[in-house]
Length: 350
Ligand SMILES: Nc1ncnc2c1ncn2[C@@H]1O[C@H](COP(=O)(O)OP(=O)(O)O)[C@@H](O)[C@H]1O
Ligand SMILES: [Mg+2]
Image (cartoon, rainbow, N blue to C red; front, side, top):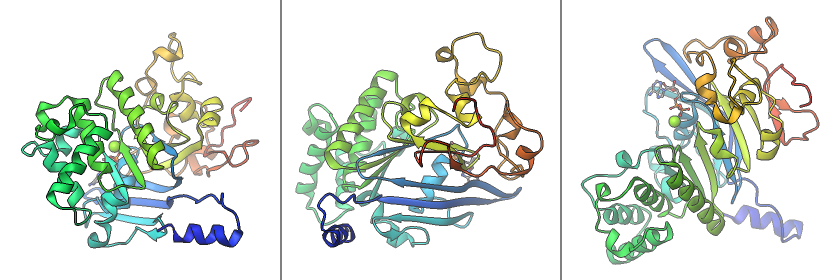
């Protein structure tokens, strides 16, 4: 799979040629056929996932974060979801592949960890059996070899006494331990990309920090590209290299993490970061829950407004242009291409 990259570096005669993204998503669109009409849930998302780096996709509930990643692996209900655009993984276009072609890519190419390990794990099978199945789904390992590998994976994700934990059932483990098991299953195929979708949302803060640390360590050891999906911008600062902020199925702002946190431009991002008071709230920014205090709701994906999707909630909207035109995602002045935003608003000093 890495032939292309090594050919290029030998042609260039350089050893330190950057390998390029392992996953490149371009203009991804997902619409659902619903009784009320076409729900346009993902409306042209583009991003790169680099080996060993973390891309955070942030946005409030319903912004299309999960649908946009499930679409890559053909995990949306067939017959009702229209998926368009491109997603090239390790040189191969994923969009349009059949179920049979995608199955080996799930797990061995792209691993996924979801929010609720209690519903993702099978309650009637031991965790050892579930990891063994994930290992054997990838190839021809014997039962004995797969069980030995399962024990190694449990050790790798920081589960104490892994040999005896193989025989535990999910309900015998804590929430944090169950999430570690899910990570072990996701790692069983040696994925190049790990998609963690609200993977720590159900965990208390201490356990959340341990899981974040674990993923960072595994990422360093294996050079995995991580897509970290969350509604919680607070988690992102410590782990992401690049941040993409989604609103109503579009990217409203993206940039490298320092740039985006230091100089947020889009009123939505500024609201999330407390850089712009959205309602009269005397408390300091760190004590507010920005999503709870942002008035209004995202638009109905069946009836997207013609202009900026954030227009109805925007505290600094201009009444004509913002209502009529979708602001394009363009480079923020002075940022090179490290920071882009989709707004007609230009904050002072940004
Ligand atoms: N099978 C489906 N049919 C119709 N709409 C759906 C379906 N699955 C998800 N949606 C809608 O897609 C939107 C985005 O959902 P999702 O990607 O889960 O949001 P997020 O992960 O950002 O919270 C929501 O409005 C949701 O109701
Ligand atoms: Mg989701």
